[in-house]
Image (cartoon, rainbow, N blue to C red; front, side, top):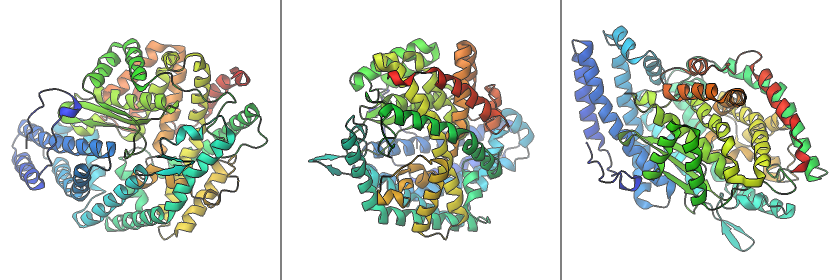
Length: 572
């Protein structure tokens, strides 16, 4: 099973070999048997180390396949390999759960908890809530449906006024200074979604049905509890999340509305339409200066100056070519960071398209990458990453910690970028909680028709995004907007994590303005802790207030309002 290390430590040279599940199972059985028969805690720890080598090998091959498939979804080799993982990941999950069960049943559990930390055992208990062998085929079907949705978006070809675009390359036209061009380009994008709606709605209908079936087989009323357990949430509940959404509705939605009204006045419009929302200034949105290579050169300088740790980290990304950043046809949409444990290598994926989002996604995903790089010393893959609610604190806070270097990317438009970035972060919160509430509605009512789901989304938009005017677009007026959101399809119940983390990131923004050294030390301590603690314990470790705490959102809103009121946005 052990692959030969590449002669050159670069991503292109990392060898891929499809893991043979039978061989993986044989090795797993051997080491798990040694664990179960061990007469001392030392012998159990030795068996765990051997198990981890098997797990790291499998995880590395899976992520190599995932990266290379999403970089080019039309590559037939990695398309076949991705299908192999879609089919076999549930069986591998079953192996992992056997390890978790043995871990929880160990006669040396108290000693193991002292050595390994209690969080591993919490995660093991949550994992066992989400899997039984009888749902294996259902999990395979869920994976296959997710891949089908990803491919539809990745392989989009949109004909627009004599040219062909994909979803990422069309975006600059959606931000054009020419309002009519913005409208036409945005309509072209949504015409693509409208044309694919029957297929997409059928995919999602299949997802909801199979997830409900999984939940019932696991003994739950519906998929909500399974979704929370999959997200490894151990210290907060759907009721706490609902209360958080209420506070966003009461405190953030009105402030976001004020910002949209300021934007309308800046743009001199009688009414802000849906195709205007991302176009922030009459002089145009700030755009990054230079080529992708220029952006990387400036990012290298930025991370060199930010800290010695970030300097070493970013040089590692550059030297090992652990980034694929530029949009091209056939590439999956969006951005992500993943990790190759065998090589201790984070990998950043994005779709540069010449907008300010290029810098947002670079700093955001670099926050993820820096965190996993900082916690790669942990023995367990479970501790390399925290749960996603905490993981998004690293990424969203890194966006703010890098503000002092934004002049390298935006030159004279830097102040404009700050204001836009801040407004976008705040205005995201209502959308983020709407996505979360939508998923609760969907999975608590799995028998809804596609039309009923669309209507439910439209009602939520009117609550959380009351400014939105679809200018007569039938598909959007009927509630189709949610169909573009990857997370709703492939990562159910993830989206609230962005909003929780954004409240924490705003706190880091305030702390950084008051005392950079203290704020950075808190952030570094958070990154180094990886996934060794639960979300709320990590929040405490970073000396942040829990987003669920009464008064936390109100205090954040106070800091935000003071900054926004200090900016004369009419000069942009």
